Image (cartoon, rainbow, N blue to C red; front, side, top):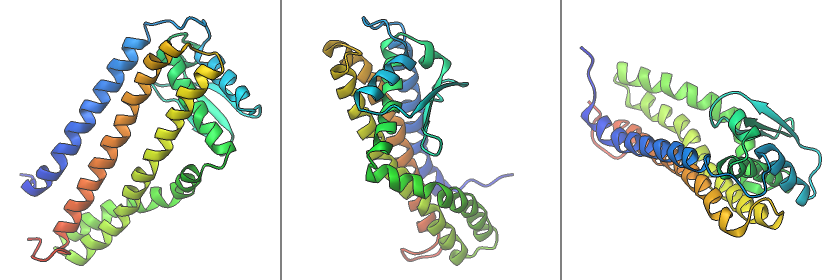
Length: 231
């Protein structure tokens, strides 16, 4: 039989519950406003292009990608990739998401410091995060608090990444809410509903940050750094 540490459940469950709630809220909010057409009649792709041009940016490609809400901006190729529903959709939800991603492209063009930091952290975060689980598992199996502590230090890079992500996502949404109105993409009243989708999506990043922080705290407690033994 597998043994599950009650202390782990104490730290993991709140983050898991918060993540599930945030995910459900994001999907339900997107579905709600995906049925509300924008008065401008523009698609998500057109809205993103219009927002970028209003910011003086003309060198970002906009492509369609697969997956539900798989929308993202790739700074390495200066490409905005929008899911099918967002790319072709003419709803407030589609426009909100597309303009949010355009906000990241504007951040990139303006060398927004948190985005620069997050982008530079991607390679080391990927490596340290993957290594941390093996080191921590080895520490638990060998009952080595030192190994667990080393794994926690490696995992802390992923925690820092999730924290840096928060201002990046919040700022991109703030730019979108402002520019989608000034660029004539949506009216001021419509901007509130389009922004509701972005607010819901932001909660998924908050949930991820809280979950990673709680997980790190658990690892630190099990490493004995706060005193006591881990067995």
